[in-house]
Length: 280
Image (tube, rainbow, N blue to C red; front, side):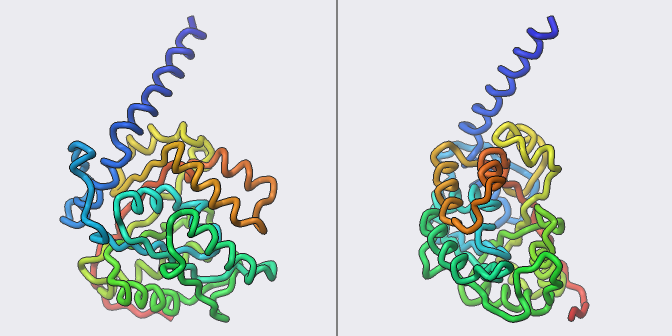
């Protein structure tokens, strides 16, 4: 009896994954973006997917990362789905990843990875600054980081920023300071009202390594934006990961197969409230 119940549960769970993907993957993204741009968060409209496409370049997204390989390790589902929906995607990497003196190689790998994902080199920027070095113990300046991000928002007329949340997904200090910088820009009123800041949810380690099996959980938990990759997009993200040859240690291969972030991205929006604060 118990064994039969387990089989029924597994069948139901797998069926729910297929149903969610085929019914809601692009609908989540496009309705989420449209509602964000109308300031109606935490609601999802379930209209026909064919009605969801946006005019080319009406969404100008900036993905902010700390190191080469962050773009495909954590943000591939959102990058690929945005590009599929005619969005203009820019990539800002705040360091060359020179922790092990591999900065030059890792920078080249980033451009190769971006090309595989579909981001042209003209929309990829890598910051080389002495105060923004790849180091899990380094305390990057919030003021410097926020000024660099704001400059890109203004130059490229960005209206959607995608970045890490306050826990940085992996807890890396360089990831977390990106959130702090964006939060600083939000509370000081420096981000244009037409621009929305979306932070990638950090989830428990159990959920993180459920691979695609985590999808129903992400679907049930409210988010401001949800992006889901199918088999084609997953293989594209995997090819992008393989561009980062200097980082392909044995555990990276396990990550590619088991990480939920290779299949699903969920985001929460940072509210724009103005306060008078100073950072250093």
